[in-house]
Length: 134
Image 1: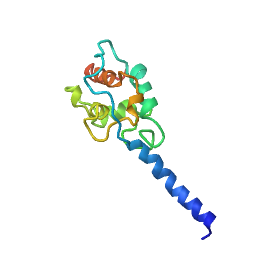
Image 2: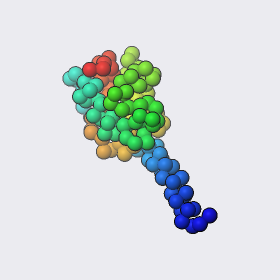
Image 3: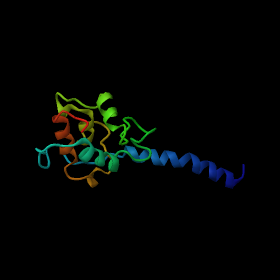
């Protein structure tokens, strides 16, 4: 095999591996007790979906055809609600919240410090408010 063909084959193999590893970066995110508790109503479509789209629903991560749960806008609620990621009776025990706060391996989302400062509190408030598809 020529060097040019070998280089192309290696590049094709390496690109997906490098891309997927970025989804599993361990990041330090805001602790669950930091920030102000969200006391107003939290809308899934207006407050949560934009956060999911910006931080989770990206290529190679929790997008359609990616790592479960599928957090693309059309599927996010069903994936979270039906996939066992929410504990509406004990919001702080919800898998999605535990990942955000770093209490469940692997901390999500990667590069967490760039998230809005209240991402954890918004998610917690939404779950406490019944995790409605509103």
